[in-house]
Image 1 (cartoon, rainbow, N blue to C red):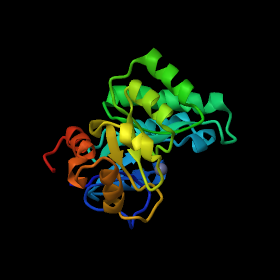
Image 2 (image 1 turned 90 degrees about the vertical axis):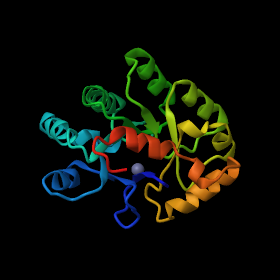
Image 3 (image 1 turned 180 degrees about the vertical axis):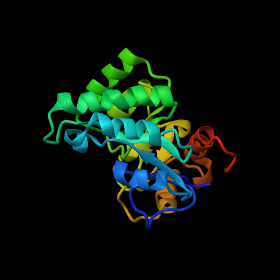
Image 4 (image 1 turned 135 degrees about the vertical axis):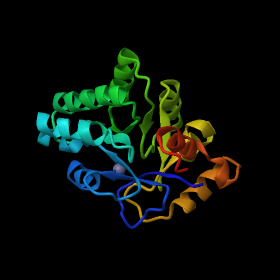
Length: 214
Ligand SMILES: [Zn+2]
């Protein structure tokens, strides 16, 4: 089963896609009986629109079994929003991830040292997934050492893929229209395995779905 761990494209989904939604879209799903798997959270780029009321809404929505992960959330030093503001919103989502027992799907740009510091200090139990990882092997190694999973999309560094253990390697399409199977094919060639051997996404989904749907 080729799980797509992170997609924003409604037209690039299969039954095993985790569709990443903003709060408004997530609220619509929450009050409907739409089936599927979703993630919801505050993107660092939207941290300036964050309010306590929105956080309460996120806390309510995330209890729904269809919502598997919190995010994408994270830190981005290349965007205009002050770092402290991003950090505050991110820390609240980490706390929610722990209390709701849902993994985080993380957008991290030029903030990896900060991210590792936070992780060391808080010692979270939930999995942290670095989505759209394009970093070089040295950063991949460091990220894995900090016990994060790496999710690869259309663009990636081949050497980083080579050193990522299969049980820490996830696959996503993000904004791309490329079929997830094609990304699985490319990654599995690098790993010298079959696409269906890349089962981390499947196992993660299975572990996070309470009903026996998979
Ligand atoms: Zn994304």
